[in-house]
Image (tube, rainbow, N blue to C red; front, side, top):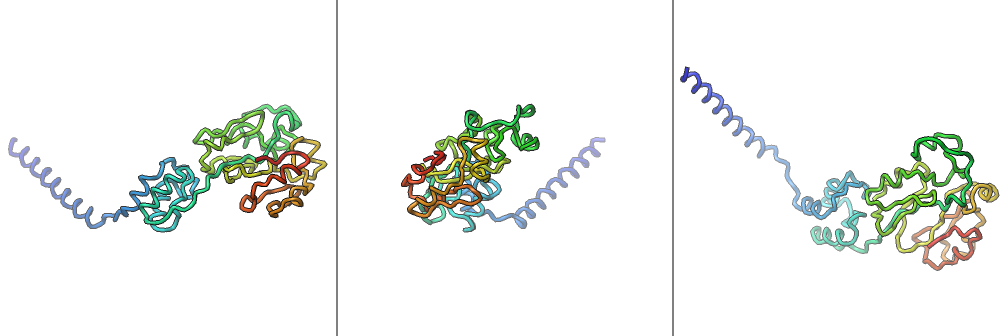
Length: 263
């Protein structure tokens, strides 16, 4: 009886040793070579995995930077400090990092935007767009105000104030999650340094805009005609400012008759 137990133990122990040796050999033979730069870059990244860089999380960005497929200042969350640290690892200059922020292109607050009916249902922007008129607001382009963007923001940078989403640019990391979440496509990423922007997304003619909102672009074109840098275009009855051309002179803001251009 004892002999049988010892034999069994010997077989099990021997099998374990053989398996261990085989695993060791396989581990060496099939080992994936680790890029030390990639590991160091990954350690510098904040780990939010927000996707704002355009890559599948911080691991994906670290791999792309290490391979030279992405710039060292690609992470919108880490900003300039992270870009500088990664630049040292990669042996390149981080360059100038321009802070950006999300911007909601709507100024249709409760006192300015008319409602066409009393909405009853889940406080969800996507759900509301399935209702007649795309929601309670008479303007079919405006912010619904039910906070999908706020719930999607991992940095608590968005609040719903007086019926519209407002972005705190000091908290915003430009991850882009709110941009993807907004069913009305009202949010864009722009430079954060007090750039001038048009707070409207309506493409209706001016007379129709005035019927539903006191804070809508009427497409008059005065901003575009008076911009000394040619930074403003009016397409589909809506003014848009090219942030790369804007020099923040403020002429557009002064000329706008409905006062929906802000800095």
